[in-house]
Image (cartoon, rainbow, N blue to C red; front, side, top):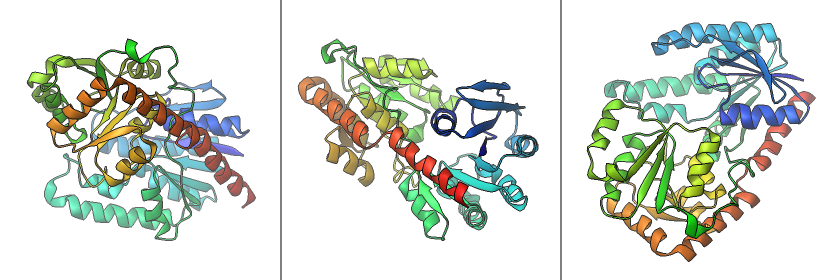
Amino acid sequence: MRICHLTSVHSHTDTRIFVKECQSLSAAGFEVHLVAPGAPDCRIEGVQIHGITREVGSRLKRMTKTVNQVYNKALEIDAEVYHFHDPELIPIGLKLKKRGKKVVYDVHEDVPRQILTKKWIPKYTNNMISKIIEAYENYASKKFDVIITATPFIRDRFLNIDCNAVDINNYPLLEELKVLDIQWSEKENAVCYVGGIAFIRGIKEMVKSLEMKSNISLLLAGKFFSPKEKEAVMKLNGWKKVKELGFLDREGVKDTYRKSKAGIVTLQPTINYIDALPVKMFEYMAAGIPVIASNFPLWKDILNKNKCGLIVDPMNPKEIAEAISWVLENPIEAEQMGQNGRKAVETEYNWEKESEKLIKVYKNLLRK
């Protein structure tokens, strides 16, 4: 079976799309192609990469010119199954269905709920746009062969409208972040945050919490979404305890976890985060460090069940500071929390198990 993954937004090295899904399918014996913007035309780890022009400038440009290029390249490849990853490619998915192709829609985010938090959309239109997008997404999704979702919460939304939906969670690869070469006592007096950086992701409260603790640093890896937000955060007193690392490759991420005594994921309680499964939370667990996380019910259940982290009010810097202090002042218990998290990843929250579900989806498509 020739499979073609399509994206108009993500890099050809994207961890979920390329490293996990495409490589797992290639290892299972499928012929795998990936169309992505700005990519070289080459073969990597058994996956044939096809680059298209990355349009710069407005979103409209990307959603027209880039999307058209994706479609033309998809037709050229002539696959049996097309697996697309961006909501703006829904019209392409529908066109491919009309041509008799099998189509898989990979839903990374709950888009209608995500729209409600987008600052570039005028607030007075958010609800209306969210409803329109949900109606269109629901209409189109019923026509696709499979809906793959990144969380059970999103899966249930599509099951409720009678779609063939399965959750394939974005859990970490078992061996990628495993750290064996450092003792707990050799770690820095540091906690880390890895990912996109924004007010809505808790950066302001994180930095404020550092003001309340003298002997701690925050290893901050990732890019700020907004220059204005970065400027505001840099004015906070706690910023002098931040080691800004910028965007890191996967080895750099692993080294950051290696140095840290805890990982922070204190996203704010917005509608699209409360039921999410943040990749960074499971990466911290995979790296064997305690998690300091927002007190959302789903996250609380996971961390409490596995005894691998601390729950805080993400809007309260004092609670975040107290959690950091606990980790530093209780090294034996903190190290045990990290070990518990690692065990949980080894038994349940790992990509290897999720990849079995993905391969099953494709084997079922073969039988149709």
